[in-house]
Each structure stands twice: as structure tokens, then as C-alpha cells.
Image (tube, rainbow, N blue to C red; front, side, top):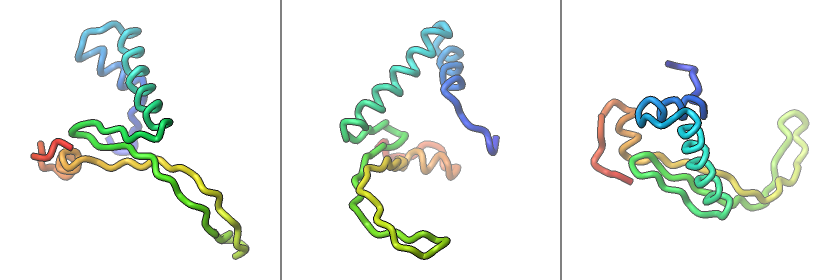
Length: 104
């Protein structure tokens, strides 16, 4: 399935198929989970999903960048960036190892 994007609708359909909730309830459940993840990240809290990975918000300081076309230096404002760190279990599954021992 190279090149295919998993959408919110795909997640809702998977919940519908596997849990037997109505499509409306499935969509609401997926939305609630995503809202909780977003709310935690907005507060600057790390969000850890066991056996999947962690989402972290990191602060980047001000720095000097360079326009690649003109070579002119420009200041880059401080900002917060979202970082995803996959768990060892997910890394193992992606690399064909099945289930890993570490459930981080």
C-alpha cells in the first residue's frame, strides 16, 4: 500500500468494523482521541502511546537562516515543533520483527 494515506475516515471505519459501534459513534470516538492528543500537546505535555510512540513538543530558539536563492541571512523566530519518537515495538514491527519486548 505504498503512497496511501491513512485518514480519519479510515480510522473511524476500522473502529466501526472491529468494535461494532455505529459509524457515528466510531467517528466520535476517533475524534475524541485525536482531540485529547492535541490538547495535551497544546499544553506542552508529552503524549505517550504504549507500543506505538511518543509525541513531544520541543522549543527551538531563535537562529540565523540563509535564503538558499539569494544567500541573504534572515533571522528565524523561536518556535515550538512537534516531534514523534517511535517505540521500540513499532520500530521492530516496521522492520519485520513482529512484536518487540519494549512496550514504551
